[in-house]
Image (cartoon, rainbow, N blue to C red; front, side, top):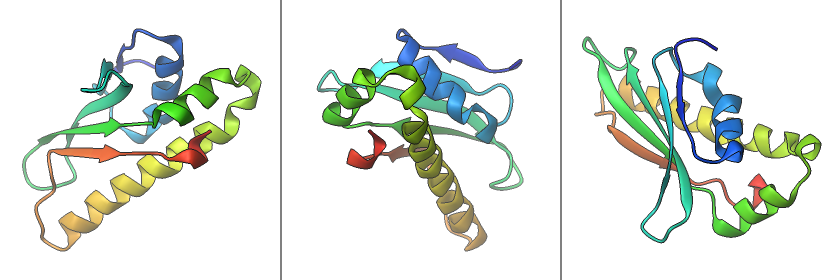
Length: 121
């Protein structure tokens, strides 16, 4: 897909980024990085046009628990479909929550975290 930037050191995280790419506008960056405890995370950086008259830079961090991430990595690639569906559901729900905040006239945060739990893998 053109217009997206993937900065992922591991193929698994780039794969996860590509699963949710279509939920975001072009020019979105998907960056793999380490949390304070060393656990890898994926952060999505995009410019949201739908939360006001001006564009807002928003960062959505996907923090998968270490145990769930280990189970995901142990799955054969063709068995990862459920994990993809769970990830999409979490991200879609968070985007919906941001839209609800905006609709209520509340401030949309610039940084949010999504933490898929044991249902991820």
